[in-house]
Image 1 (tube, helix red, strand yellow):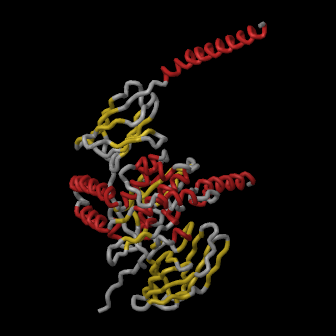
Image 2 (image 1 turned 90 degrees about the vertical axis):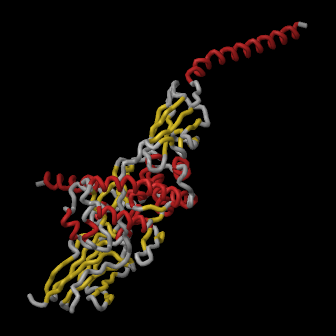
Image 3 (image 1 turned 45 degrees about the vertical axis):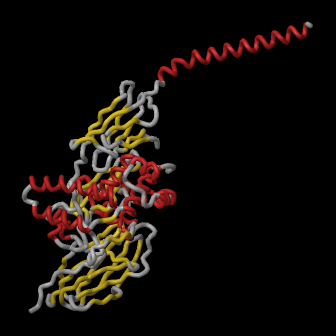
Length: 136
Length: 341
């Protein structure tokens, strides 16, 4: 009889410890959760000539990303956190990067054309030939 | 006196160290980077971040990441001769009219990017732009350098206005030079077709050799403490071919393309070759305007990576002299040999 009681007491204290542990973990992890608030990022991408489609939008140092639609709009496929960096890239335009904060739920991005001079020199492996005066 | 030698030694050590070229990375194998460039052959330019990720994922160092990007651009983007010819014509026409030139540039820029995106064809600026953009997406500092490129046509007309773009890239806190356009392949000038023929010599090329046919608009992009040449010297410099970049580290002599000497004078050629290069055959091809013959020079010596070639010019006349090392056309010079002293 005595042994039974001890066993019951053991089970009780064990479950109390478990409940306490779960409670403690929940309490402790709460502030962390508040810090890690996920942000859904949507937005539209414009240029001087109107909305830009096909702009690549991706999370820096990752493979996660999306492409803007014909009207320039986009919804980032995964939830972001504050201080994440989004990169916007499109051929012929300057790359743009943006640090996400809690208020960045709707982004209006203006892409600027890359300021470049179009130059070209074609080289060949054809042997050089000097110009000679023609003998008449 | 001791101090003088010490300082001289220190100075030499510093200057030697400040030279930035491909063999700084001889210890690194590019096998993995090169295979990533090969695996992604034919990839589209629709999603540049994705492409950058695919090219660089799993590579440990910036130089490997840059290598994969550079090699991919060189082996996947074609040089468009029609675009080149059109741009050249227009720029020539508008060279005195800056407003029209700017308007043309704006218009042409759009076309360039469209052609690049849809057909992966471009001209120099497009190559340099692709290398820069993909590198920047991989967090590598890389710039487009505009300036004058001296081609094997040797036509001084081509150097009246800036005509070429290439790249400078910062790796391990040092700037390096490369020319993706010229490394990509060669234009068959007869049929206008472009043929891929990757030339590794233009990857992180030696700045001294680079300066012989690349004159940047901004002096600092020579990446030399002092420019080797001013613009006049650059115009007068010998013709150095793309193949030379595979073999030479430095072109020392002759300094000029056009030379005048008297009969029985010796033509002297001096180069410093890249580390690990040992030349097997050195030949001169001499063209007098009618006949061309290939000969072995009177004397060839090779010591401490320096190659000395000398040949006595016995006949008078005007000669185009082409130097070839191991079947690679390296450089051309013109000698006017006069009869009397």
